[in-house]
Length: 181
Image (tube, helix red, strand yellow):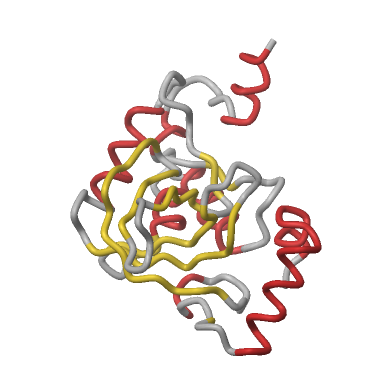
């Protein structure tokens, strides 16, 4: 279990994850193509019901009455009211269209009750694809997948997406901090 997982979820979740691991509770490792360090996760086959912005969506999953609110792990996309926010959302909608199959690699809840996950649409790692396209930042505070940083560096070098603008883009966490005041 990574330090960022423990930091986000606290000791209760870490203990529950270890217990699930010991009991074999449907845990499975990341796709090798994700580049993430092997980590046990619960994999859910779901259907996309909506995409809110560039780093969150809702999905219908078997065994759940309501749709699950999914937050793409380790990335942070521009807010809708921020420059490039609508474009970022539209790219995630294109990657994971409504009513399409989605594979959710569930890491458990975040502090807002959303499901933190690595998301695969059409066998494509949506988290990595958003960063590679320059539609999201690696969320430094929570990231531990080094491959995401390489994708972000390449997007910046190639001036893709939000990196193409003539001005320096404002990270979403900085945008939110500035707008809280």
